[in-house]
Image (cartoon, rainbow, N blue to C red; front, side):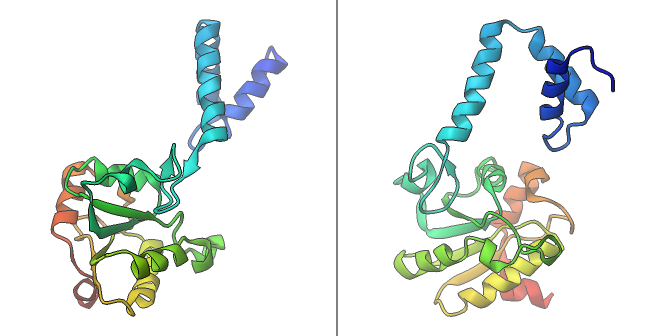
Length: 205
């Protein structure tokens, strides 16, 4: 792609680094910004910069947060006996949008994937174990994507959690194998949470 401006080319190159954004889409976004008022572009730039510099991760569940402890973990009306284990913040948002869950969360940050060089040590597992030792958790719900990586991670976590006297369940498989949790519609995901099954039962099927 030939550019009439080095500045334009540099901006397009940066936007092209975003996932799912090719050069043509990047060019369209950059040209859109050029057509906006300077104040709007500066506001956009400041929001991104502030996000990168000031964002925090909850000390309890590792969800993205504005504060050391996120709003969900600090909410007094949440059911503290339930912990829903998810891969990342997008999955927290997906479950919250169902309005079918009122417990707490634990964000692993990734799924076990040997092909990508991601092992158990790269996940927030130790802090989950620590929560189960100190908190009054009665049930852990595995809400991970129905993929090989998701199933591998659940299998590993189940072995680590066996020492605790808690109920371990997994969301019902109304979700097709290979489906990412964040893309599942709210009704299906909500039904999968409310009709969750014991993990041992899910494995034996």
